[in-house]
Image (cartoon, rainbow, N blue to C red; front, side, top):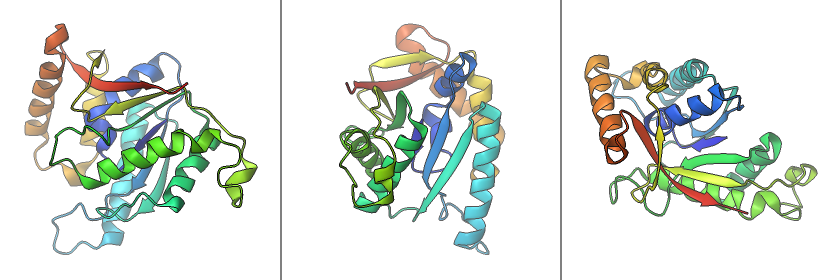
Length: 224
């Protein structure tokens, strides 16, 4: 399971790794906290039209990666808060989907430091709060509909966009799918050729310390 702030976040940081797990037989599901509804410079766009377009693009991208399911919480883009209702929604989907492993943003040591998107930091923190201890504790949210869902313990969390990453995944075999998924977000792509060139350089730079042609990097947390 991956929890991300915006429709094109996983493509940037973990899509190659998710594609590898799918190729190995895993089922992957994606929970998007916002629909990226302020992500447009079109003077005629509205938040509703941007939301609809970006959700459509996210589904196309997920299909290209082989992701089983995409769900949108539709929190306000650019204004996500780590509230009890948000944590409750995250707990609900963790208990419904029951993942062994969860991918999300690094809230404590984000990359880039200082200038990382606020939604990324907030969503990462809320996701970790949901994983530990709320989703596993039977009495958490006992007064709500979530109480009817059995508790679930996530075994590991892979933090992407982390400035302290120490785990590297070779994504050479899945990089083209990662790139194709990113290019599905047409509303966020001014120049596909330039983007592809930049992403190839970034993947090579990330993999260089381990002599990998293309890599993604993570901070790994063992929860249990």
